[in-house]
Length: 156
Image (tube, rainbow, N blue to C red):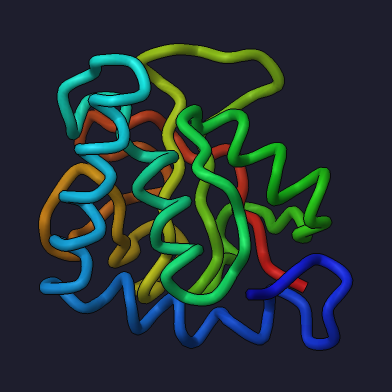
């Protein structure tokens, strides 16, 4: 499995992450595992509060060695601060980037994290997360009643 100091780093696994997350059958399997882990972790019924564990498992499935993480803000910090992923402004996102709505303090019910599969324009994207069993559309601006994305993280 990949570690932060390994040659090629996390960026060498991004094509795999996109392929894993874009495949509806694989996404369904990952979401089922995430649901079991979330229920065992704190009794929460998936998909509520399941974005971080879903993305953790997608990252693991693609070869990026992260632990099971259950909070979006904790996964954001793991990628940004520990694994040194670059902060990318909204509008500059690319496939494989991780979108986060998290600020510096937890905001339960508003914090979210997801992977970009395809950028349609500076605002609209095709993404994968816990909120649908298929890749689906999301706007970085929050259009459609979602929390706006604060920034994206890009593997290095």
